[in-house]
Length: 141
Image (cartoon, rainbow, N blue to C red; front, side):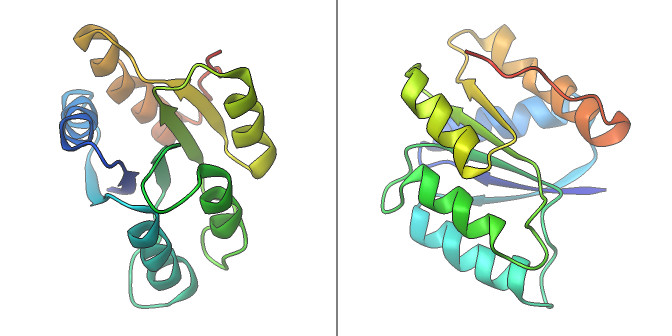
């Protein structure tokens, strides 16, 4: 079973991500945080502490309230247990500057959030292939 951290401030998007993962057949335990502050608190506990499960994958909204995406990625990269955890940034931004900033900060991949349900549901099989088989998804522009 994989542990996935979803950092998403828009509950419908967080629920769609959860549904996509479940419909993709991925056996996972999912934790959801909604702000940059919650994300950093989780990182301190799960990634630097010993009492919580470190995530196998982080799905991060680039524009969380009370936390800049680049700073959040950099903070995770400084932790003991999550320094190498894959971070997939999902955002409504299509800005090449945001994409470059995310990848330069240490994100594994940068994706614009899908606008169609079918495309959103495709996230589940993509994440499953990545976690179970090591198939790295291509970065979206």
